[in-house]
Image (cartoon, rainbow, N blue to C red):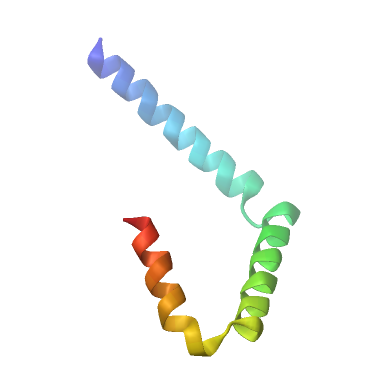
Length: 65
């Protein structure tokens, strides 16, 4: 029974990956998300306070732990 469930899970994962590659990847919505993220990174680069960059990164990274 466990092997059957494991095999079905593998088949489902393959189908989901195939759907993602053929339907979602490089679609209009995918490119829109990429462009919006690039825009925000560009805005972040221009408006960042470079004198306090180290402290902002330190606080941001400490929040991850």
